[in-house]
Image (cartoon, rainbow, N blue to C red; front, top):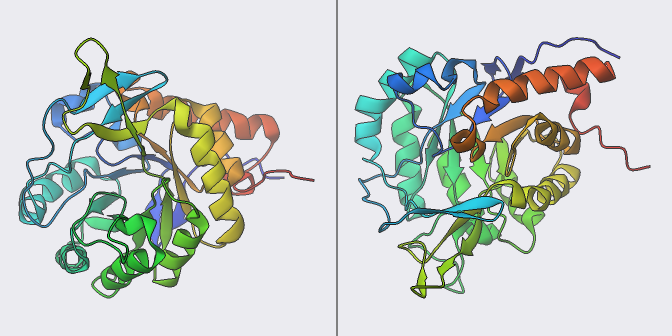
Amino acid sequence: MGRDLNLGLECWGIGFQNPVIIASGCIEYDESLSEVFPFRECGALVTKTITLDRRDGNPMPRTTEVDCGMLNSIGLQNEGIYHYVKKILPRISNELQIPIITSIAGFSIEEYASIASHLDREKAVAAIEINISCPNLEKSKDESLLFAQDPYMSYGVVKAVRESTTKPVIVKLSPDVTDIVAIAQAVVDAGADGLTVANTYPAMAVDIETRRPKLGNITGGMSGPAIRPLTLKKLWDVYSNVRDVPIIASGGIMDASHAVEYIIAGATFISLGTVNFINPGAVLEVISGIKDYLLRHKMSYKELIGSLKID
């Protein structure tokens, strides 16, 4: 077996110095943060989700701690695609010198396609991550599901984006579905190059003294260590049934052992989110921990991916 501890890999025609990615919406690049957060050591940065037009986001409060995790309800606050392309993208791409994966969301299929078309012209965008698991205005046939909860709607969004860009297209799946494999297969059939498994879980918290919700939007998305076993199961299901599609694992990764667990189950990349709020040094610790694991087990990174023993 291999002894190569180089974590660099090429995927979608993009060179990554390592497989550890910063999840969308967790750490927004700022030069002052570079003193405490190792942006340039990351494999890639997924941006905060961008919409076609400016959005103010959800009412405050937007975050709250819960047992073994946190809830957030940001509401896709951002300045819109034009501001992103003109102001944000040039700055982060020039200063970070790592692949920039731009997360996008729309409220109709046409909006998704329009945003992708704008990004297709931007050399600084390495890939596009489609966030189909956010609330939307265009519902599925039963008028109750998100894009990400309906394979036909998911297919339609990804197909439209695929026809609007030549860049690699990664789809961020929702965990709040009965059959995540069906959704994953639908978006791959539509042209997705990769999958992120998965977004946060719908959840809520109540202040029992005031009898009011702890979030201004009442409900939000739960992240953190409590969701890891749930997301791990979903990732394994996808990896086992939708082959030859690189997967980004996202959900409750707090240290290197959690990262290795996901890689063994089939993840090619590891996405760090909530842990960044707790430990800004987690990126470096996870990278080092993966290398230590490979050294101890005399394996290469490629050999580790999907190496779960079920006999």
